[in-house]
Image (tube, rainbow, N blue to C red):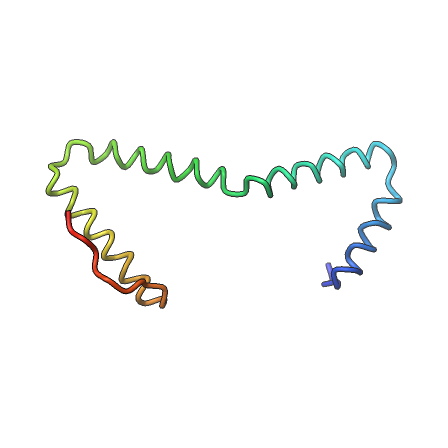
Length: 98
C-alpha cells in the first residue's frame, strides 16, 4: 500500500467504505469498535503477562534465603541501571540500601 497524506487516506477510506454492502459495513463498524477498545486499553494484555511472569518468578524464588533474594534484586537493579546509563536514560543519584 502506498503512503498517503492523512487527508488523502481519509478520503480513500470514505470512498472505499461508501462502496460496501450493508453486511460489509457492519463488519467495518465492528472492526472500528474493536480498534477503539484496543486503543482504550492497549497495555492490558501486556500487563497481564507481566503480572503472570512476576508471580511465576516469585514462586520460583520463594524458598531462597532473604540475603540471596536481595543480592539477586540488587544485581538486577544494577544491570538495569547500567543499561540506562548506556542508553543515556539514567537518573543521577545513588540507590538507597535496604
